[in-house]
Image (cartoon, rainbow, N blue to C red; front, side, top):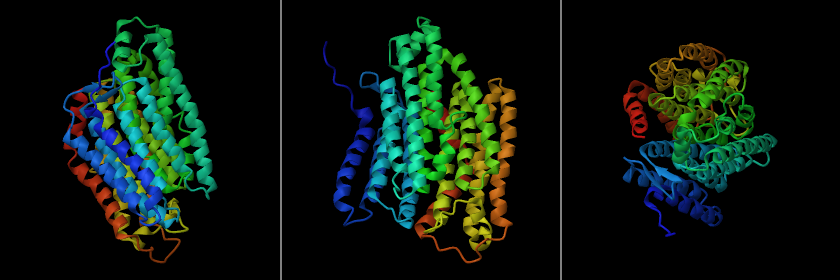
Length: 481
């Protein structure tokens, strides 16, 4: 058997990111004492360099390398670019937060960079082993990030909860993979799909495998009934880490869902579609109703995120290319909106005061009208109110569900969207109509944070006024598959 040297070119962004993350990991021990922000700037440069390599070699056709374990296509490249874009924003907001709360350390950025590497591997994975490898690189980084603030019992408790439940979900996913491998005799997604289509695999074993795989993926997405970790972890983790958890990993989780269900198991649509329908409906209902009673904004955004996952799954359950493209558009919009929402909490946060309760936002308009306006844009976009980009995200997935013949699910989606609008408007009521608990002016926030939160918020409006290019990008990338 002749050894064939694989093509390394498709994986250059990953290799560059790994090399730079490893260099920063070692260098941080030397320069952190002399140059406090060197690790932060090096991390941002690493992301920009990775984005440069993706854009200069943007994939127009599908390229598979490393013996069928790694794929490079336009779908992967677009998602990676948005992961980088979101991560740039995450690290920008995080730097200010870590400084304000006096636990700034280079480890946060190094772990975050390795997490991004894991997301890249997940997005381009083409067999079960690569999928698992990417998932674990990302997850292990996040477990450590949540526990970074060792003096906070809430953060350590959140990290333990996430670690234990994450290990359980990973076990479920691996069990599902082993069943699929046992039934098909292959770990490569196209081969698995081909064997399933041919009808040569054991249908019972395949069905069980699908159930375990979907359970594992549902945990990573935070879909009901596997959502129990999300509110506690979002609440207990430092806000900078919550910002990381609630945004970029969702893009990677969508990618792994697409690779496994759509590319790996198209012949089992009847099996996984039913599971996705149940999780989607439950996620939308729980996300809409439970968020109403939350007083903590981070917990409210956690349940809001669960509701958004329900909408994201609408595109998947449509089980056609247009549906998948609408889900891709939704997850990108959701990640960008999440950066804006948690970024606002960080911008308003002051030393000794987290600014994460809805009551903290009372009278914000009187204390800082500009930030109040930015928060209005963010909440309207999350609620799906036109002309903000969140409206188009919701409309697209609902439209694809109706086209697929699931009108009754679309009705449930519209009802839950109306209910969820209540708790977003509740925040705006506090901002514009309630008297502040503290009449003193807000501590001035740094100009960097002010510009950042303003840029991200206004982008939600601009994208809403001109959504066609982003929508077209998503539909074309799925169409090329």
